[in-house]
Image 1 (tube, one colour):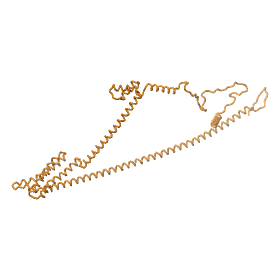
Image 2 (cartoon, rainbow, N blue to C red):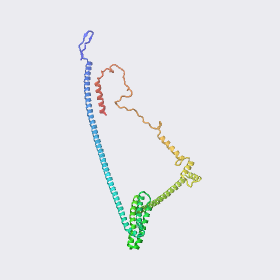
Image 3 (cartoon, helix red, strand yellow):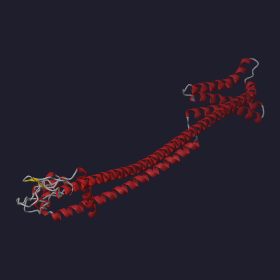
Image 4 (cartoon, one colour):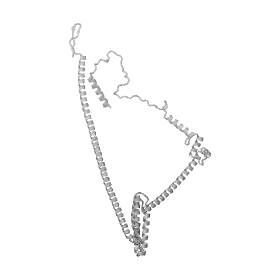
Amino acid sequence: MTAQLDHINGAAVVPRFDPVALAEAEAIRTRASAEAEALRIEAEAKAEAERIKAVEEARKQKIVNDKADARAREEQAARDARIAKLNREREEQERAALQAREQAAAEEQSEAARVEEVAAAEEQWRSYALRFYAVCSIVALPVQIAAFYNPNALWLMAAPIMLEGGAWVVLKGARAAAAGRRPHWHYRLIAWCLAFIAAGINLWHGLNAFDPATAIGTAFASIAGPGVYDLHEHGRIRAREGKRTWRQRWAARRNKRAEAAAMAQAEKQQRAEQEAADAAAAEKAAQLAADREADFPEVWKHAKKLAAALGETTVTEDIWIQAHIDKEGTPPGESVEIINGRNNATRRVLHARSTAPGETPVKVTKDQRASQMPPSKPRRTYRPPTRPGIRRQGDTAKYVEAANRQAAITAKAAVNESR
């Protein structure tokens, strides 16, 4: 309330209440209370928004942490699985290597035992052959010495020793030749000749001076001794040179005959397949020639003339291409009609896809903008003419900033509820 003292014509007036002042005071109080309420609402809204944001951030962070934890557990499990797999693979490799070493050692030991066994058997067989040779020489020499006995020429008694010893020396020469990779057949031939000579002497003198059993036994001894030793050397030479036995040779011959029969059968089948393919190709060529003659008679006639002119008995593919070019002006597969049709079709497609004005409907669009965005152009404001008794801009005091913010919040809430 405001008291005013008006002096009109020097006279005092009784104080009175001014309604405008009261309204202004009431408006000030209303604005102050509205501002305070707006500040309180804004603070509460901010606090609530911060709380909701914090809760949401906490929830999101928990989700991120859970995902990271799960990912870390999965990676650790995968890492453990890879480590376990690598350990298993390493153990398997070590076990396989150990088994391979053990197997190799066992094979080496077995091979060494086999080689040792073979060497022992070979040495035993050689010693037995030598002993048998010595026994046979002891059996055969007395009859031979008796055959060469002459009181006037006792030195002739050395002839049997020369025969038996000569056979032995020549067989040792054959052994040395085989070891040196030289021919050895002639050594063995000489040894057999000496053995047969000694056997003949034993047989002749045994039949004349003794009985047939003595003659045959001593003759057999003269052959058997060198023969058994040569048999030993023959086996050793064949094993060293890698020669096959008669059983292996017969098996190789059978396999060779089977392979030859299989090869002949395969060649026969291949010839039959080739003949069938040639017949099919000839039939196909004949059908192609008939189709070309029926579909392109003029080109075919010209192609036959070209073939005859070029010395060909048939219309080859090159001749057909040249004839088609001569008659149609294009390679096979093309013609004037085909080119014109293709060009017409291309023009129709281009016409259908044309976007020239007046031929394609155009959709008229206008700008879209959100309701909260300011207008791109200034709005037209209606300003009525000023007349007495009409309120004008500026008559009412402006609201405080807090009241404006609260009014904006209320308007936004109303818009959201209406949506």
